[in-house]
Length: 204
Image (cartoon, rainbow, N blue to C red; front, side, top):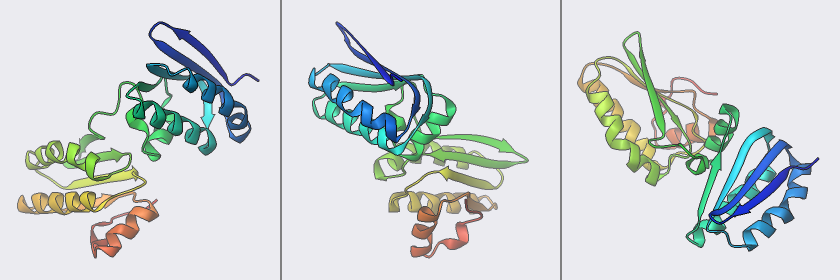
């Protein structure tokens, strides 16, 4: 099966992927992807519309391609991802490469007076600095309990822990409680090291 087709034009290169991109596919894709990068396109677009699955080996190839193009100050984008693929890219912190997202790395809803903020991607210092202000604004204008749902956050830096402390203080200032839900083990460990395990309400 052909896992990738390349098309070049005056504006750059489009790589159209298809099928199940597992370890077998990664072995076949390594050289063709390398060949397209060696053409030094000014922008490279990876189209995943017909992809049913992507494994870690292919994710590594995509990450390496993106990193090399960014070092050259070229443009690298991922397009036409299904919701399942978006979640995979979010869990690996690569969702910023997807066209149309992410902006701020969260969504929110209010149900039964509880503000629930859904976060995704790696919560390093840079990403936390982008979302700190809009999250503060959400919490300060809300009257009710606040929850961070972080099942799609694979990594959290100390800046994210401080964001949670800040959110807890803001919620308590208005007489309501705060908690973090659906926490992956690695992130839960960070909270325990900081002595903040009481903020953790559930795990995945």
